[in-house]
Length: 354
Ligand code: UD1
Ligand code: UDP
Picture 1: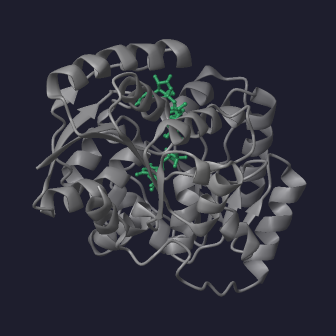
Picture 2: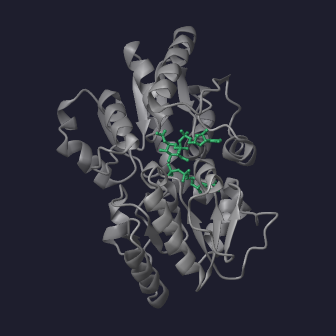
């Protein structure tokens, strides 16, 4: 029996773990111990995913959050190291690119515990993003690299990974597995009258929220879109703090702001919206899973296969570019071809390779 310690802490990691932890639990030769760092902690950013997606309860809850990047990562490393010493796992598994990812990987590397990285090889080529640093460092010290796409593998190869002591697999994307697993159980969010026709919007990325001028420009663009079609905007706590502080343009009445919703509710919104406007990594892919065009409020994307295919347009915070993309997607029927993120069996493949 191989013992795996999994470190998760942020919303997208719970969704990824829902697929992979299920595959691990079904594998006769694997057992899993889950550490939740606490990076995300509100019920609607954490507990709701464990409840809705039947993710096994974490064995350890670290309650480390709301700190600077360095303090958060440092405290996580210290606590994770204690647990690894007690648990003596065969392997540590991490997902994506958050501070929880890097903390888990560094703690394991110091103890020479092999590391599996799910969502390896993603690159924005923007070293100002904390996520880019987290994923490059995690990839470099991981021993099993699970790439969601061939492009992700090519990124690793171009960085010389074929000469390193690590195994690279193209697994497909576990978020696609999750979308397929839960799509039929989607539920309408309560407490808001979802308009008949709407655009789904989310904003939380540090580059947009740390810069009030950028955030103001984004809000003005959302207001302009809302003059033509309503928006449903589940607001991430990071963004809520800024909206509550004042100093930003008023949101139009046609923007329905709601607290973050659970995964089953977000699936309902994805299925029923006309378009997605977001700076989220995960939502860009989910827009594609549900055949919705996507406007990305960033200067680049890791998910370049979506932009190459014409399903997603990179617009930054420039309102002319955003509105041009909005009009393009409204006037043109996009034909989506499936298959960019695997066949929905990524989690099973990962469990086998573990
Ligand atoms: C983190 C990840 C980002 C990921 C995002 C997913 C890093 C560097 N960033 O960004 O890659 O896209 O999660 O959503 O790891 N907060 C709450 N309640 C919560 C969670 C957060 O109030 O449940 C507040 C925190 O107190 C903090 C702010 O939101 O003030 C930001 O949280 P943090 O985890 O630092 O970064 P995210 O922006 O969520
Ligand atoms: N999500 C959710 N509720 C919301 C907004 C998003 O469940 O109110 C899900 C969304 O479907 C996606 C994931 O959270 O799978 C993405 O998380 P986020 O945008 O916070 O992070 P990123 O993917 O950018 O790292």
